[in-house]
Length: 311
Ligand code: CP
Image 1 (cartoon, rainbow, N blue to C red):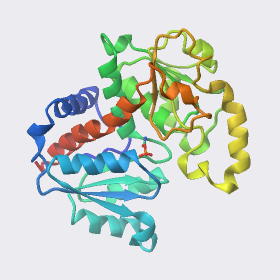
Image 2: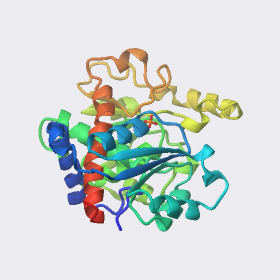
Image 3: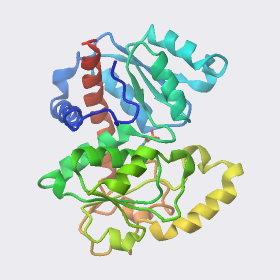
Image 4: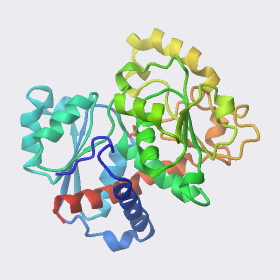
């Protein structure tokens, strides 16, 4: 059975198929009102979310199905084995989406589930975000994607890992403008590091000013993962990270004269990874990108349900 843990096992053709379906549903949503009639999606959350929760729930509703929010802390996932709780869930619903702290727990869920499992973001990967990002780049880029140049400015993390995987598969040039000393330990992934080392189109450049000079898209994300941002125990580490990362802030000075689109997967921490004015700069496509979570989710659900033979 096909799952979506991290995009690694998808071919370029399959990714293009998902993105194509997303574009079709975005263009003609009324034609797909019954696509997932009588289907239920369990959305399991161990961490906070706005976009992932809303876009999957609205996607299921608009496709004729139903989504169930399962809060990890008030469910019996906190008391029992992840495998037992997952098998129970999968005997009730036809798909599971999970946002978890640890990728290894996502692995346990995929191993225990009788239905397809979607990774809704963990410490290593954010595959649904990467699909959305490439849908957005496709819409905003004139010409072939191999002419586009995405520059990710910030810290190496789950979002940059998934961008590396999808850009490598689709042949989209990507530069990671992240510090040399960036060792965001829990998100490091050996396969992603190998792609950055060996790919001809994925590069690392620790100098953000040099990296953005010929960018068509400049992309940033939070410098501190969501579960740590307001955590008092992480305050000293957060302050050190902010001081290290200030030269990597997306602001008017960094993008002065650069003809690019500005992307951010949200939630935004303005004054940190991006200045307030850049969020609303004419070059910003941040809200188009965020809206595309809904359309990308629909394309993914369509593809995954068809792979499972459910529809
Ligand atoms: N980009 C994203 O995953 O947003 P949420 O954390 O709000 O779901």
